[in-house]
Image (cartoon, rainbow, N blue to C red; front, side, top):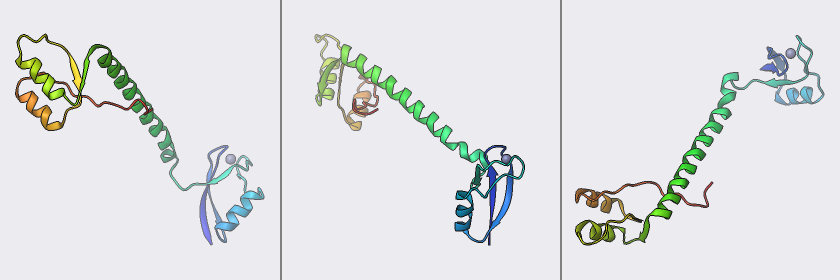
Length: 140
Ligand SMILES: [Zn+2]
């Protein structure tokens, strides 16, 4: 014998019911022999989780929206950089230094790829540098 805690989806009444096995529960449910003794509804489900835990999907969708929001901000920022900065690719550290150390060279904004060690070096040399994650356009 198995004891299930059942819940009525209509009136949220929770009650215990005994079954000879789990198959009997399915059989009775499919034949609509299970019903709520308060409102008579046949929308009966097994309660496997506490009702408040069932809302965890809501929290997840909020997180997803938050991530989407951050990604769209990054995408806007990326567009701003592309429109206003000169792309130097892998030469970033070299270009940044030549701008920094050559007084004749016009100050200009550049962007490109740079390793974590190079970032530390450039910062120690007093070169102004900002890091931010470069997101792939293909990503949602
Ligand atoms: Zn009910």
